[in-house]
Picture 1: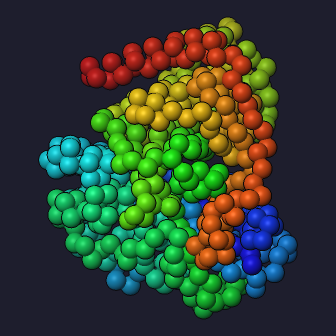
Picture 2 (picture 1 turned 90 degrees about the vertical axis):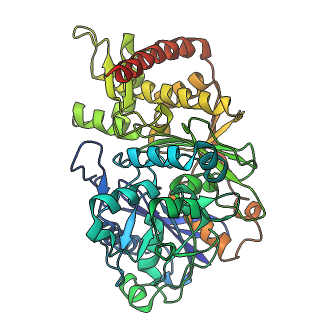
Length: 496
C-alpha cells in the first residue's frame, strides 16, 4: 500500500507518497515554487484564500504524479497536515464565504481577552486549558460583530485541514484536536464546550461531525478522483494541525517526549498526560493526535510567530542569496554577532509575550563594523534566544526535556541557528529526515489500520545527527544580554 500525505503550509503545499511497508518516501512535490503571500489588509491582520489552498493541493498532486515514481492506483489512504488555528467559513452550498483568518492574525485578541475575563479565568484554564486568546473561536466572534450578514450565511466552520478534507470527500468532519486548537473543546466533559458556544452566541450546528484524528473522514469523491488521477473511494484517514503532526512524524507521542520546529513560526511541543495549563496562557495545551476520551495525551505548545519569517525577510533584504549562502555567511561571524542583537517578534501578537505586538527590533547597529553576515547571524541567534525564553516558561510549568527531536529542515538546516539553539537552551537536539507531508502519510497509514501500532509505523526511523551543547556559558551570557533588551522593550510597550 502507498500513502499520500498533504501538508497545507502557510508558504506552500507539500505532498509526498510513502511506501507503507518500508516507510520510505517515494516522491515529494511542492506548490507553488515561490512562497505564498499572506494578505494583510490592516496591521496585525493575516488572511489567505482557502480556494487557493485547494488549487495548490491539486497542482501539487499533479506535479507529484509527473515524477512517475509510483503506481497511482496503489495509493490506499490520504492524510492531511495543516496550519493551525485558521478559520474557514462555508455556506450551505459549501462555498467559501471569505478569506481564512489564519494563525498569525491578531485582530481577535480583544475578543479572546474579554471572554477570558467574563467566562472566568479558572473555568477557561481548567476546562479549555487555554485563554480564548486570538484562536479560532475568538476569530469567529470578530466575524460575528464586524460581518454580521456574512455570519448569518455560515453553515459550517472549519480548520484548514477540515476544509481540504471536505474538498476531497464532500464530507464535513472535524476532530477533538482541531476543536481544542480553536478553543472549542471542554477537556473535562470530552465534548464541545457549551460555555464557549453560548458565550459567543454560536449555534452547535456550525460544528462539523466530530471524529478522532485517526478515523475515516470520508472517501475520495469520483469527480475529484478523476481530476487528481486517483482511484475513487480512497479514505482520508488522518488529519491534524501542523505541530501535532510534526510531533507525530518525530514519533513524539508519549509523556515527556518533545519536538521542535522552526519554519515560518517556531514551536516547541511536548507531551503530557496531565490536563496542564499556564496561568498566564503564554503557552498552550491542545489535544494531541492520540488523545481520546480515555487517554490524556496533551500537546503543550510554545509558539513563536517570528521565526523563519524573519529569516526570509532578511533574505529579501540582503538580496540574491540562497539560504545555504546565508548560512555560510552567518558562520563566518563569531557568536554574538559583534554586539548586534535582534528581537524577532514582527509577525503579529506573541502569546508567550502575553499577546503583545512588539515588532522586530535591531539593537546596537554599528555602520562601520556590521555587515550582511552580522545581520544574518544576529537574526538567527535572536530566533534561538526566543526559543530559550519560551522554553524557560515551559520549564516553569513542569516541562523539562532532556532531548529535543526536530526535522533537519527550515532553520535547523542552519548550523549557526542549531548551535545557538542547543547552547542557549542547554538541551541536545536529535535531527531526523522527515517533514509534515511524510508525517501526514504515516498518520494515514495508522488511521486506515495498516500499522498495528505507532511503534510499527516508526520502526525504520533513524537519527541523522545529534548536536550536543558545547558553549553553554558563552551563549547563556549572550542570551542574558538579549533578554535584558526584550525586558526593556516590553516595559516600553507597557508604558505606552
